Image (tube, rainbow, N blue to C red; front, side, top):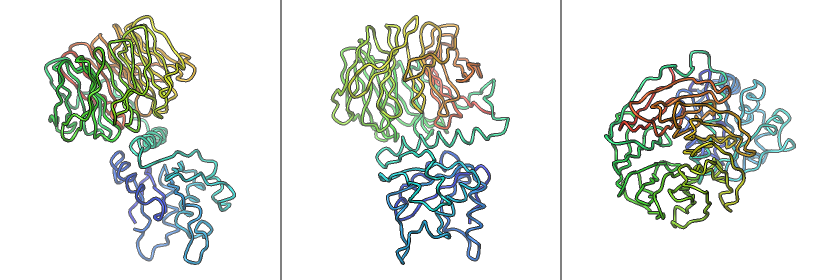
Length: 457
């Protein structure tokens, strides 16, 4: 059997009810953490080996066990009609039992609508599984669901990571992209292999983050102000001063749909499932669009232009930042206002943390602030030497990136507010984005460049 190294991830599943999704999940986790840190199939145990001992050792040396629970997970039976969970030698039972006994972080994943097993459905040795907090994973929302799981795993691994992996005080540029005109937006693709940029040269471009080569270019009739990848990376949304937002096919460059506005468009954000797109406009409105039909499903109004929009990780909330010096959170379906918070100047950007509990705002009052997204209570504020134009949470939620007119991008600890790192451009920094694994930061600047920085030594 392939060894599971210390610090690895073990995927437990039953082939008859979750094998397809298990394969997709293995690919995603292997891509993010490395194939040598992800183990999935006990069928590769060598002949003649005590499989119970091997499973116990393998689970005991991993840090996370992901248990895929499908509709037949509890009721699956052997050829004699006996429930497999009642068999002390059942692979899945051995895996779950070993994880519980060895206090491995056990994350149940409910697939295909499966309910969480109840204590009475489980053998006594597995009763602890029923008390573990579970998440749901569906084929139609797999990119978003998998990203949530990756973030949870990263938090577990980070909590057990030895010293020496702190953010570098002097991050270095690992890749530079030169556009010649102001770079107004940056966004990583969902696997981190692509970077999209928005530019005052009327283009959005997609770059290979490994080679630095331009992959494809999309053209508007005026400056492009913002970019956002769809959840699976197949679509790119762009906002432009030409009074349109557009959605493009990232493989072919073909325009899928054009969304007309009354004035220029300043911001775009996809919902987790890609079915909705939020836009912020130079007029005092934010809109939510159906990405298939191009119809507006909700509209909310401020008393000034709306340069910042974000949809919550569950797609239920819309956050907006406005020139009226407020940021607001709305019900994305009804447009009903939930909370509002205020700055002393224009709120230029907003961002949700990946768990949806925090809202970050960037303002021309030279501050970025973190708020409780449900109550609006201020949790943290940090200061630049000039207006702050952009803000982003790291996937793990422990770091906050900000970008400002003072030619710097900065990394802050979201608990203490301590500045952890500072990066400098030759002109104002207008955009920031963390890579999906949180180890890189992209910045876009008025100096005509987009840079990718390595955050860790």
